[in-house]
Length: 481
Image 1 (cartoon, one colour):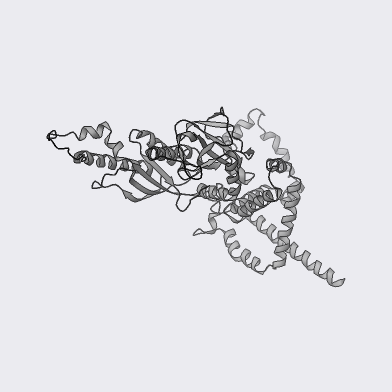
Image 2 (tube, one colour):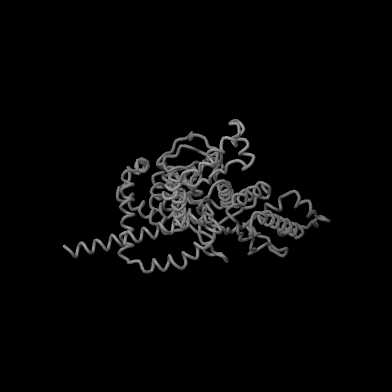
């Protein structure tokens, strides 16, 4: 009995020691604050004072004292502290009414799979860069709490009698006091808004104007998939209800949205009768439609990306039936959220521009510049359809000018651009899509939306030339098929 009491006493002392040290560190930090400050956005959530050339006193204390203390803390004490956090977390989850209502969206799914998916996502949040944002939110909340020792001291401290007697003589008229105070000290500072949860940081408003869905979906319909983004809320159950004012890849069907949990999918219907099918019954794209369909795939993706963070899907991603689409989202749900975070945090973007020589040569400006100086000589024998050398030279010159204009316009919104390829004047003429520019741009998150919108503007500016602009993130590839 005595041994058990002694062990319990040591555990209590260890826990008390750990909590007292944490409280002391927080209090010291409240008094001094960081020398170089915090960045509240997702772009830079780490305290810069720790890595600067002149770290503050609290940064040195963390490097010298805090780390040495943690190294000597017993493993069982840290385990007990984490157990206390788990107990508190589980108790709050049980009584969290708003969370329970959000879980009602998953009631038609297996309970065990839902719990495993949520637990995997929760574990990923704690192991990724979002862990720093959680720590920042907690530290902000601790800093905003008033210190009990300071408030109690101020309440007990009496005011000197001399100040009380001289106060009425210095009092200004009531109606002038607020204005005078504002003139002396300026308008009151508004406190910086801090998000209350992680998902509030990713919360999105509807990026596009939409209309109610005015057509009926059938179980055997084929759908073309463009990309995946965050859903503005987490109440989607995979039942589409809104469509965009945007035509799909075939120019006949509208693009609409399927929201499932935190994931939004941009899709459009395909008229299966317009395509041949393979041995598995899937639509096969005929060769004459390949080039224009590739162009429309990238154009629609760039329009969506100009307003929203999006994972682009590979060309000709087709799935039959809404139920199969939902099943794919369920199978890849956690991976989709991870890739969305990676795309959101990306600062390097590969941009490649393609053109068709046939389309460039058909432009009036190119044709005018390459008029023949003398007509062809008539002959009895058929002449091979050789391409006009002067016309081809003008085509390449026009393509180089387009590539240079693209690069100059996009570089304005980037911190740097590494040119991997740009067309030269001695390039050959091709019958298929030809790359005229390939650059890797480094774009800060404060300029990223302007960068994407500039791509959309360039697409409209050179609409007659029909350039295909492909934007990707290095080392990020995702597919649902």
